[in-house]
Amino acid sequence: MTLLGSDYLYERTQSMASLRLKLAAFRFMGICRKALTLKPLIQSLICINVLLICFPVGATETLEQVWGIALQRDHVLAASQQKEQAALHQLSSAQANYLPRITLESGYTRTESEPAAKVNIPALPMLKGTTLPFAQDSAYFGGVSISAPLFTSGKISSGVAAAQAQSEATQAHSQLTRSDLKLAIAQSYIAVLRAGHAVNVSNAHIASVSKHVDDVQALFDKGYVARHDLLASQVAMANARQLGLQANNAYELACAALNRWLGRQYDSAVAIQDIGNIANEASATDLPALLQTATAQRKELQELARQSMAYKKQASSVAAGHLPQIGLTAGYSKLDNRYLAEDKGWYVGIVMKWDLFDGGLIRHQASQLSATAQAINEMEADTRERIALQVHQSWLSRQEASARMRLVGKAVEQADETLALARERYRSGLAPNSDVLDAEARRLQAYSNRDNAIYDHEFARLQLLHASGQL
Image (cartoon, rainbow, N blue to C red; front, side, top):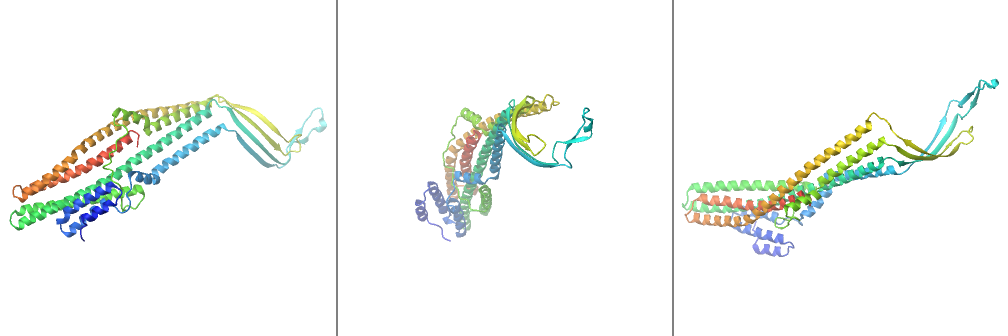
């Protein structure tokens, strides 16, 4: 298998719409140039691996697109949304208590004999023992009635307010679930990018160590270096290959985790855009401003505040049961009874209910709800403190990542130069083999530090947005 030429890759990049893919092409060309001196099999493996990472098959997906796909199918978010719908139905149910109720009743009654009353009038002894029917032994009855609350001492209004607060709490919880999921998905997204770059670095390290092994082998064959140098270089090569295997396995694991979010086969190819070079800043970089934003926008605080309000209103609704409840009732009924002068008619009335004593049942129920509301208030205060700590920690992590970003680029350049000098000195007999291997290790660490700084910086930005309630 022949190595792809630089001219071909350059022409291919000219047709790409994304500048990021062009940069990936140049990175690929550089690694392949370094592999030109290797054995054909190693050349093929390195270039194929890097090509798959730099140029994934199919269109690449952005973080926003991954968010859209993952959130649309996530079961936890779907469950939160269903709970939100349940709370809305509960609110509608509470509001329905304001409306009148219309009831239709009908039936048929059959008795063993006609109901009758005994006649016993002392002034008329001849009627003694006589019975007087007052209903039929079979009869139909029916009617329609309407009832409506007139005054409930705040029982209904407090119940509606409690349901409204609970609905708002479930909405805040659903938004909190969405924000938490976005951060978790972003972490998985960045893990794929981090692992992909680790594969690139390990492949470049393998290529570099392999070239050094070839140099040492050539010098050893000519009798210029000791066998110890060759063995040490071969050990370094074996270690480099182990790092490569670990890097590839970590990449596969990261891809499987991201595919789980996307609802795809775990071994499906992952093609995502690199976000390491995007210079995004949080909407506010000032720590006090971020703390204020978090206090106003964090959904945990909104959820707990509305839950506390819901329990307080429930306590008020229950306590109103000790006060008078006044309602209106009206209707029309008909009873099939030939003994009645009028077997149908309208009626209307005012009904009042007032529980004067219930053994303390309502009082204790209201106190229980009030105590629960106070407990939630304490949880809200603790959550407020933890959020402030999260914002402060995320802000410090972002500052550290930004500082590291300013250092890693120079460190990579110095590591490359140090390795080149060490190799030249070794070939000239001015430095031991250990200097080259140490320079190789430092170069590997420098490139790893660079990639870690890039993606730590990006994840710290997302963490800061999440901590301040802006994700």
